[in-house]
Amino acid sequence: MFEAIAFYLFAFLTIAMFYITVTTSQALYALTALAAGMIFISAFFFILGADFLGAVQIVVYSGAVMALYAFGMMFFDTTREVKEKAANKFIVTGLATISAILVVVIVAAPIVADNITAYYPMTEGAGNTQEVGIVLFTKYLVPFELAAVMLLVAMVSGIVLAGKKMDLSLTLMSDREILEMREEKNKKVLS
Amino acid sequence: MMEIGLNHYLVLSTILFSIGLIGVMRRKNLLMLFFATEILLNSVNIAFAAISHFYGDLTGQMFAFFVIAIAASEVAVGLGLLIVWHKRHNAIDLDLMSTMRG
Image (cartoon, rainbow over all chains, first blue to last red; front, side, top):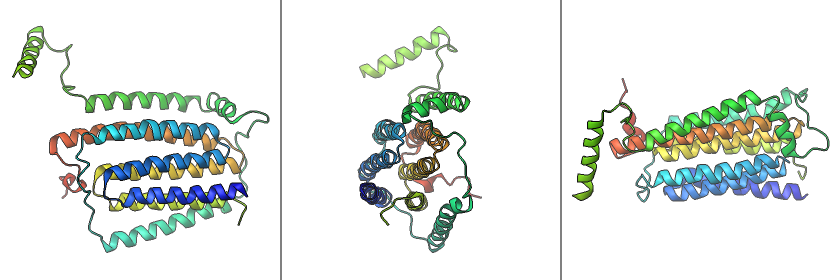
């Protein structure tokens, strides 16, 4: 009973928030609606018993990703209204077709594959966080390490792309060039 | 009606995925396009968590974790590229990027 009420309430809220994100013409409205939608999605994870996933969703999406977008939006002109594509008949038709096919496939897939058995069944008497830790550090250890390396690569590339004068390397420059660069910088500060 | 099953979650995930798809197709601003891709990834996460719950299998949750990691790194690299593009062209419209049109 309460599960049904919670499900329908959060489903309505999530759909409304994401609809605002997709349709609004203000970038700031879209950002805040997206953050709210992310938090509402974590409610589904808590309903489904995936507590750790819900906490990670809140921390990573509403914390890290949204903060990153907020910092990124400082670079762009966000007060200007966002221009939309002119409505194209073919695009809309194709969109409707693809969505309909997706609905059919996603709803029909579990009916077709009815005899699914669990690879890694839930451990009895262990909390969700414990279970996740057991499976993540035994069966999925290599993908976990790969994900760590991928996050490191993403961090370095983000710093290099967004930072200033990242195309220069101090180790490859001679001392004279470094001095010249510093003098130029001082001139800019003084002028 | 009052019993929430797997199909409820799958239908919700489908609706959210369609919303994200509409966003990807009709947005011209690249920042808005990134928002729409976030919606797509999140809708898939709901489906993974629901299947993991109803079949008593933790694999779905594991994949949801990896999807979250991929989304975080995608945002970092994508925003970096977007900032570089904005510095050069002073605009982030998708139509300006069609320089390789034949």
